[in-house]
Image (cartoon, rainbow, N blue to C red; front, top):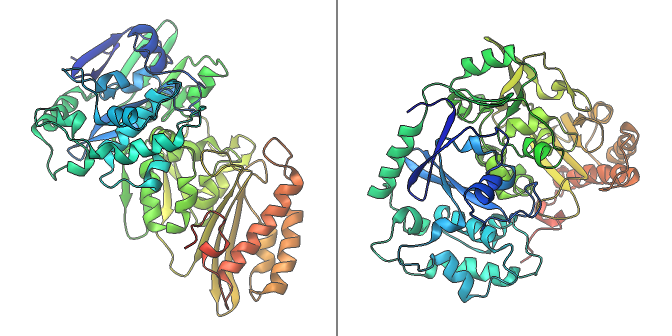
Length: 505
């Protein structure tokens, strides 16, 4: 059963075994070229357009979890031990349409049809996971699907109505039971699928060889650490939202790939009285859900971080370890004092996240060392916290400037302040000169005016396609002013009063 050169997953209720596969072959290539499942389309090959969207199922807490992902940047071997649903999977034995499909037909949600399978699969994931569906939930769920025919109104209408369709009693609840009908306990069919998935889980690492290429998916963290210490040039893969693009767009060769998704110890979020620890294989979706409960001020930024399929696949630790100067999670995490746990072989050490980054795409990790987890302190109720993201679109856009602030006042004076920016330097960086200027000062307009001018001199941002250097400098200062308006000792404004995206009553 544990053939070490074979991946196993479930498709349409049947066990699929794939042998001798290129480690970086994408799921989309496999579907279209090997299985001739051409419903999934290639639009962008970088996880932006959603035409290739599929749904992956896994057993989580004795229930099936359904997550929409982009097949174009998902490597096929990462499917090992999971369930795959494509648009073709929704067909019934009598060839009737799934409620999601029928709603799209009835509400004229398909025009040219190219994007339709991807929309259907994002809607299917929504159908299976959200018991209460409204316009805001739909906008989030479909943020990663683009329609060039501008058919969004009718697609949204179809999503609003898809739960209204009756489901026959003899339909498979794994496919047809909406989340609104889910009982507390799994159905017999769902429990059977969970048992089948559990039987596919490996007790030891999966090792695939293809020519000179190697794909290794360790089952334990010690196994991972030992292998990476011996192969420090290997590419560590978790969600693949960056690495997938290296292959599809940059045509990189990756001789050795280490996949973290099967390492049980890295798929956990643990909480204690002092901190929340998020493992390296925890998805952005799950990490953001946990952090939003602790820091609701970060919720809008998390919502605007990429799209739902990208958040479902990508990981928080991957974003942190990648170290992009425009990675949105780092300013927020640095502002509240997050740390990273680094591992090399059997040894671990902790480092303040702000000290992880040395220069553009350079970090403080030693050869053979990797980020095991991110440790975020529990909320300090004395801090006032905000995070702001500036970009050209609300959804699925990379920041021109991302700013995070954490302020502690003692009476009307600044006892402590953390000001961290993304997009202003070669790394996510604190505005230490401005912080030092502000500490101990009265938090008022006069102090703020000096601080805004100091902040303009603190960074030398680049001009690029997203923003000019002058724009970045000015808006960074303006965001500090916005933070002041929301936190000043007298007459502080509610965030909705200064948020252009806030819904006005």
